Image (tube, rainbow, N blue to C red; front, side, top):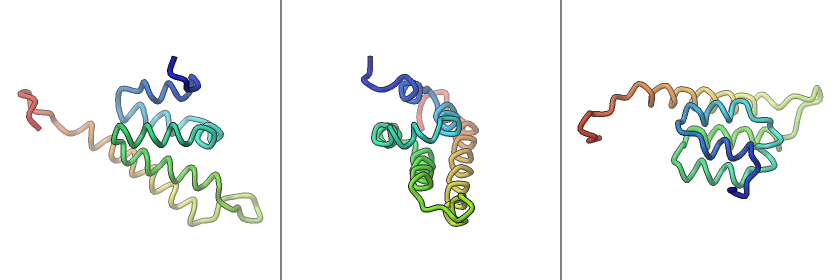
Length: 105
């Protein structure tokens, strides 16, 4: 047992950035807020920079002041969307990179 809630254990057990990006895209925002320290530490530790950036934008959106109609401001929404697109772009780019058969990078 890791000491984390099972939903966070799913992120920790993820084997690829694609799996991590899918988790970040689907997890309830309440989990992002509640477990922000564990999630942020894990994303930093494994080096998923684009995922950490998107996580940070989601956390900022959760904490941001909303407009009169209840939506995040345009600036906050743009930041969240930009980091989401950047995260998925990094995932796709990483999947397209070929690793030499001899293991050299």
